[in-house]
Length: 226
Image 1 (cartoon, rainbow, N blue to C red):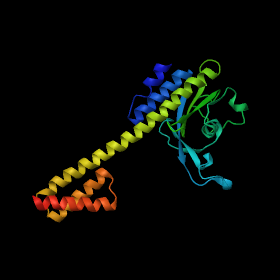
Image 2: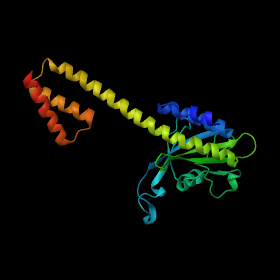
Image 3: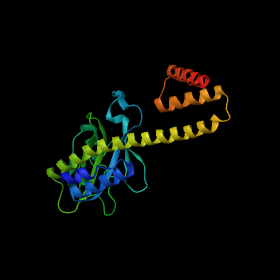
Image 4: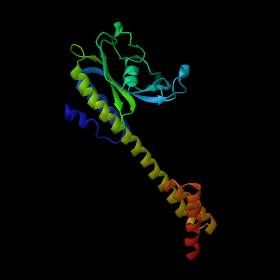
């Protein structure tokens, strides 16, 4: 089981990591279906609740075909996120916590459900890993234990995937700007080149306006020296 958890969280590509986690969840829990929900801010809390209340979040589903929809933070998945603890039900249609729109599975319907919170290294819940319809019997505490391990590791992996995507986007932007800067170098005035160099520094370093002015000055000095 531990090997499955580790192998499921090796990718830094978000789509590949999502597929691995879903497959691992079905394997670990011996379940027919698995889904991944991500908490997403949806607005202000009802009834004067505090701003960081779970009621201000929705559950964005990933892994249900091509559908990409935000559900209310309700059902067994919502309770799992709100309480930051695994939950399961082997008679969901007789369970008041069950919500058929959220705690869903394709085919003949939902006969059993188990959910584990995806919490990052700071302990903040960022999503829910849900499995439905155990192939033999009902879900057990042992199933929840291993599902919880996978969910918490998956949260860290998904966070790394997002950071990697951001880094790759920055690299692509920087490469594009460098290519544009090289093209301008032979036919631009010093002022135009200084402006372009300043924008490039801001793109790479995330410079503030003050630092951007310094970049302009440095670029201008270098051009004058050349």
